Image (tube, rainbow, N blue to C red; front, side):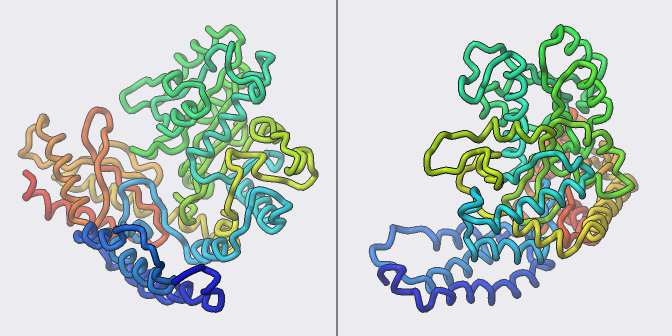
Length: 475
């Protein structure tokens, strides 16, 4: 096979293969293990030297589908609980396929008015979904990490401006370290964002009143007072990955108001607490933040990769990311929005399309019902753990994360961490349910997060059944 041009008359044939494979694959997710134990051997079939002569699109995609549907980690299924990972609703997956089909260069209005307009629409819909003011600026990003980069880049612009410096053109040289304060719930993506922005990963200071990481408000206030009026950034965390715990955002907004600080809210999955009256109190105060971030490929259940960043002062996004001075690009003051001047990416796919599709398909009510179903599933799992003599619930179930450990009565305390670590490894190797371990308050624990749209109570019940089946083999 030669030039791709030789296949112009059969360009859709390979796509047809994918479409025909989709039904059986998706239909089988409910019964399929999260991974195949023989996956490494299967993946080897995709290795080898670069072909001199191509094999053609149909043969190549046939092999990719055969290996991929067998060897992939089936994180879009109902029993992938290891990280806070959603799935893809039917509408979102179809929207993502549409994004690939249309292949829009989504950074500029000039290259795709469609992509720019749909991004504007979904950002408005998301503000409405989360209860954010309509005046906030926003941009879609690949992830919560990039969303944090975006929001904290706007904060950095604001902070440097308070020191009389245009950090976009002049950089950080000569400026003091930007004070960033948070609780012990702060996620590593915030530190990574600070690292990328040149502010320093370890300059962030945490103020925790206990070993769970809950914020020490008096200590944080004392630190702000000690700055003697110098600008600072407070990071509030909505949804901790170990327990689902959250900072008191309204209290932190009060602190930011009293001391003239910037309030950034990392709501990667916790922002979706705003959708349900049962959990909306956790998000109270987020509408007072200066920047807010969340993920789409978590609780919104759109395909990887998807994030969003909102900023109270829209001009700061353009200040942080626009104004390149390239003659072939539109002026940053162009009345038509150019999203590559409002975020860290220049080349961008039309990631608004799957978000538009799922929000249009299921609406506010459908997404509220999905969130509440996951709240019910998580609390069902928490209840089973509390009732079990060989399990220990380590934190209240607030959102979609259940923090617990295996604790049979005949195992000494000093042996529990090793036992749970071995059990976590065995569970991941087994593949029927995916839920590894983490460290919480110095203990090795499980923290499954059921937030896939397919997940039911039976799936989390299977998690406990498999744990008990494997436990005797690792003791």
